[in-house]
Image (cartoon, rainbow, N blue to C red; front, side, top):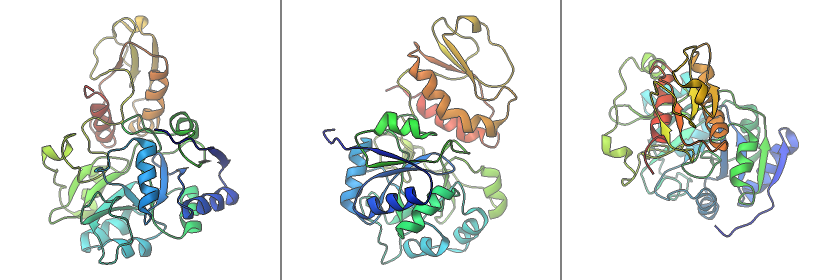
Length: 329
């Protein structure tokens, strides 16, 4: 990575939104908060800008990107919505749900952003800063998480700066995000597929659909295949330290990512302990997940031990991210 840019940081507000829109229109890269995590934005119609985004993240070019838009009318200009997709959009947008739908015939999103697929991933974020930037820009913005590819996703502007300073043009600082894990991705195909669990639970989606979500083929999530949607690579969201899941004890020198009130044997030997939610609240745990993983990793432990987390509701998304973080690299 040879590029070296002067990365500006601006507070959220009208001036920040206007500056972000100007930079996006000029082909630059802007990091901004959404309700899920901070995203790294580029003009969805500008293949050169998207190539720069891939380079800044070190992201595999076969991994598709999500196009963020300001409203449903903008979404329908780039994707075709059948009755079920429209039902989900009307129920959950703006919000932490991404829908993968067929492209429109005149879809302006660059092929590089869709990894050559005939579908496009679309989301309307529920965050005032993201909305202001999208409306000021006036077009679709692709925005994967604003971090080095495969690293822990950013929930603060400081996380973005740590990974991407010198690689991007602007960071708009909107404070901490609310949800803390990426959007849920549903493929609106012949049978709706849960492509990635995330900030909207499977149960709420299935209640609106009136049917169960199918799962994609196992091979769709391997590192050697082209993913159907963002965030499906087997190794992803990973700190530098090894991650050990379902820990029943803590080894000397390990960091502990705790959950709930239980005390594990060996706790006093842990190099550092952070608890996602002492009360066992999965919403709180999701909001803290990436920030705590980054904080533990910064202590350079021999490994990060993670206590068992239930699979209920947002626990499905939390465990998905943790399993990907734990894949041997």
